[in-house]
Structures are given as C-alpha cells and as structure tokens.
Image 1 (spheres, helix red, strand yellow):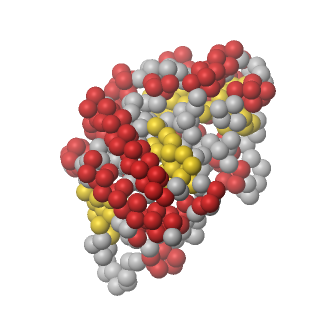
Image 2 (tube, helix red, strand yellow):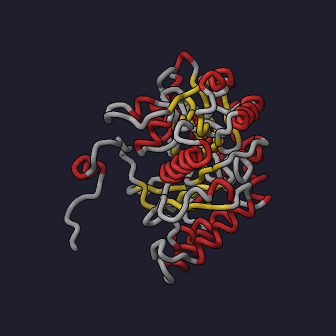
Image 3 (tube, one colour):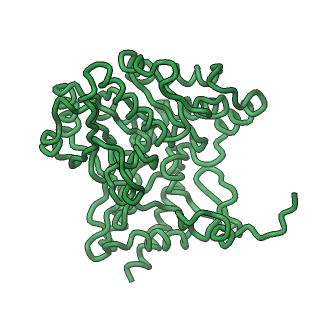
Length: 404
C-alpha cells in the first residue's frame, strides 16, 4: 500500500460525503487536554470531542485497558457473552437505579433501544392504543430516523419522507405544555436532564419532579437521555442523581467509552423483561474491546475525587468566563452545570457563535457551539486547572478580537 497523495483538508472534499464542514485543522495527536495538528500547532481542548473525551486524550488507564484487551479478544458476537461486558454491566447496575443493561455502539442506538422497549412495554402491558411518545422542543436524541424524529428540531428530521408516527413535542421547563399533550395513550416521555445541543438548558427542580409525577399518573415510562450528561459530566455519575428524580430507562454513551464508541441502555427488571430473545440486537454492541475501555473509563470517573473535581473546576470556569464578560459584555448569561457550560451571546453578537469558535481556534483553543448564539464548553473532567486558566486566556483573546 503506497500513499502518494497529500492527506489534507482538500482531500475531505474529494472523498467524503458533504454532510460535514470540518475545520482546516487536522489534529494528529493529543495528550491530556492538549492536542497538536499536522503543523505541530498546540491547542487546548475545551470541546472534549463533544463531551466524549471525559479523561482527555491518551489517558493511561484507557490506553492500558485498550492495549491489554486488544491482545486478548476483540469481537465475538452475541451468540456468546464476554467478561468485559459482564463486568461493565455489573458496575453500571451497582452504581445506578438499574437492574439490567443493553449495550450498543452509540447514543442514537441506545436511544433507539429505549424507544423500542418503551413501545413494547406499553403494548404488552396496556395494548396497542398506548403508543404516544412525547419529547421536548430543541431536544436532541440522535440521528437515526426514529431518534431524530423524537428529537425536537424539525430541521434535522425534515426532508426524508414520512416520519415515524405518534411522536409529539412539549416545551422544556413548561409543565403545562406537557400536561396538555399527556393522556393514558402516552407510552413514554423522553428528556435530557439538561438540554445539550438545544442550548445548555438546565431543568427547574419543579419541572424535573413534575415530569416524573405526570408519568406516574399516566402509566408512562420516563426515559432520561443521559448521552451527554452522563458519566460525571455534571458532577454526579449520572445527572438524575443530582435532580432527585429516577427515570425508568436511562441511556448513556459519549463519555462512557472515553472516546471509544459504546452506548448503553439501563433499566429495571420489570421493564427489561419485555425485550425477550430476538426482539432487539446489535452486531458490535457489548463487544469486549469497547466494554474493556468503558470499564476503565467508568472506574476512573466514578470516584469522589473526580466527581468533586468536576464541581470545583466548574466554579473556576464560570468565574473565569464572568471575568472575561465583565470586560467585554459579550454574553447575556453563563449557564449549565458541572463541565457542560454554555455562554449565551448578547443581542449585539447574535448569530456569531461560529465566528467566535473560529477566532478561538486561531488562538489555539478548541470550543463548541450549541446553535448560532451559544458557546458550549465540554472539556475533560480531569482537565488540569492550569489548562483551564490558559484556555480561558486564549478565549479572552478571541473575545477581544470579535469585540473590535
């Protein structure tokens, strides 16, 4: 195999489907919360691969788990089980409300399993009439046709023909709008315990508890999509723990593998029994390689030190962002929880989040956006404090440029 061609951003346009518009920067290696590109320029990573790299880049625990398992066994099939999958499932059930786990490869697949299970549960317990799924506007649940339709942004689901039916959307943080849609035909309510893509929006205490109560009244299952909020992101192992609201089904992915693709759906014995042999499956789901890495990620994150560290680092971040804002008045609000932080642009800077992201990149900082008006930060949960300080200094330079 010879490679007589330049591997650069132009090659992307030649060989890739044009559904992404990636940056010209091509990172080639990372360590901790720093990344280097083809030209060996250094970047501080405040993006975390969109809340995935919970332990940064090349964390020794993850590298060790991956290389050790890589030399043992990678893939079998679900005709057989494997040790890493069993250990990971046991640790997940021991650490949460759940009794049972189903493994997939991504958040969308975990959500797909959750939605199929909710429909099956309702059908077998209450009959075919009980099939309505309610989600929330601006919510995001993945890109399969089912999950993208459940997601509350029509722009992502329009244009692909007839959509899966019996899906409705209420307004987040508005109990009345949910009440108006719910009935005994509701099979499930799906929500993020903090809306990520939709703008880093935290639920009010009253809303979170109210959704649970409405589900109880109507015999509907409550599904928490913790793909972005789970595995320490908000300072608890799972965000539901900080809300004092327990879902019936929970989905996890992103940080669960620390960068290796894996998804999981967690639920109770009573609900799980409805996915009998043959009702659902996944070729790669629960493969030993993914589960070995995820086990190391979970073990590392699920400690008092790391989870308390998230809360402390969040304070450092918010204080730093507020200090920048006191000078430049570019943000109307700094919001979020733990290390999922949103900075909302003021009217004067409306629609310029992508511009600020690009300006930050020029200063050697990787950030994210959530829509056209919100900067989003989702760094490693163990990012050193000095990297936060240095990253914010770079961010301030970008802000200053835009302010001119």
